[in-house]
Length: 373
Image (cartoon, rainbow, N blue to C red; front, side, top):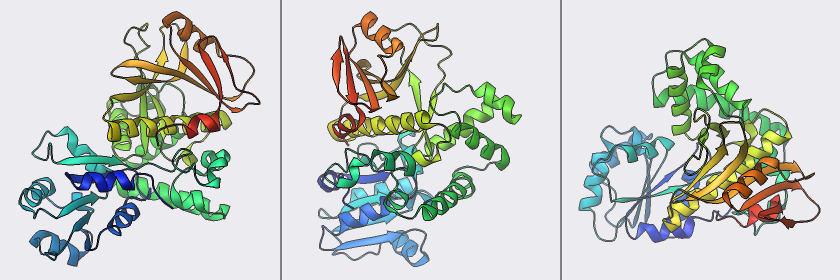
């Protein structure tokens, strides 16, 4: 299935190294190979292959190569210095595409010599906006229940979907996490993972989780950071500028795979809205250079709204997600009236859209269809 980012990736390859990062099994290698089909001479090398790793180390790919795809390169010791050397000495016509573990994204924090030599393309699960030209995008329940990862999303066999997810969870914990960092207590990590699945949409207290699993808040914070770095979960933190300061800055945790959410329909729908908004934010940042962020609002006295989109730290839109419409959210109305903000209440089951004061009541499907990615 066509991924919307292909054209942007090809455009960026003419300027710098392109990194494709994102969750495991989201289609990074598939996308790289699809991009490779647009070039006459593409060389694909996977560092996990002994033969390919030797070619990579020796830089012995064919000189006629127009596009060089390096998969799992992060497993090579000193890969950043290696890649800098390849890029700085490459022929004018050689383009470089790097993909593999989400761990590649962490190098941006190191301030090393790759700075200024790359563009990041974050590949996330399918969204309604990305697939809006396909009739399958009309089935919002499919996104919510199966998640947007290609294999389970496209499967018509529910048993195969369950088998995929069980193997996916096992691979996340036993392979990705252990490859990323040495974990001394895998059982505690698994318990934290399971607790987070059940607390989607609620502010998360690391101290509370620590008590539940008989660990320390510092350890919980470390485990959350690992799960976040590997694109298993993402945090949404409170917005505080010009708003009454939030309680303890507790984040809300959401999953990149909507199928991992354990909870009622409201929790699963909120996770799907969060993921769709995050993909919109990433698109604005990666392809338009905007400074968008996804946050939520919460006051000291507990008034809370699910999400807010910000640009340059200014609120663009305040968003509440609801399964059904009965009336306007009191908290959404409070923030919009007090701070003169644009509000949107996204409703999964809604007969008619309307605007009441500063707040738009929107059907979820057309709203999500209008997002960037």
